[in-house]
Image 1: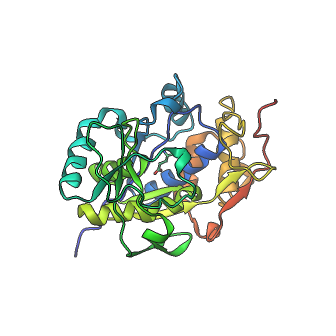
Image 2: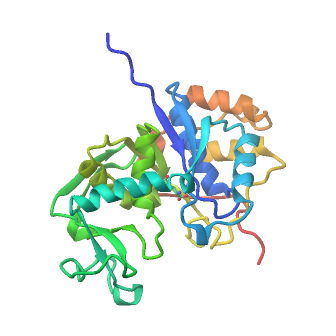
Length: 299
Ligand code: GLU
């Protein structure tokens, strides 16, 4: 009999502030999906977009996860320490002429799909430029464990997207593909807001000959104005004083129906119950969830 493949999941927060309910919701879903299959759960800090990083966030994220019983395996990976790896792979891709230099400023980009203006222009390497990947007319299809079959026409829906920004920062789409592969992640659970990124990432996996993980995009928690919880929408950090209560609420929002007698249980007991009973099926085709909790900080 063939050995069952070890499931390797991950949580990859950006250090743009303390964890709020929305990010903890995703963390818990990916933790439960991995642990319920006796899998590993890794932690990666997506800290490449340095202008958006907020000092102290990394420490706060790690402390919060620990406090909520979401213990990760292996050591934390920091994207900011992998620059040499990204550069080397980018050099290979450039040598295969799969990319081109682009000088278009944000102002010149009128639509979300890039027009290809710089595609056949010569731009000297020492001229400040972004690096774009050439897309082709292929269809990218994948099965999302909650959202079902997703098919995108890459060139039409996404166009030639950026791998390295003009400010030399490695773009999320590229870094995530490299890191998931290096960490042997085979199960990506993340928020529905990233569903649109997945075909681009699968395209890069195909070009680089990398394996495509299984994907599960969980609904995002929205506030009463219909906005995704984020720092921009003033989502409050999770209440560190009552981790058990928060985990219980999150399990309800994950539609897990935890028994009422666990309402005041310690996190370890709640998580043991949740790992044993984890069933994401009630979240099928769900894109967002209204939070009944106080999730906005006062103005
Ligand atoms: N760093 C991304 C975020 O915080 C998530 C990346 C991913 O899960 O692929 O939204």
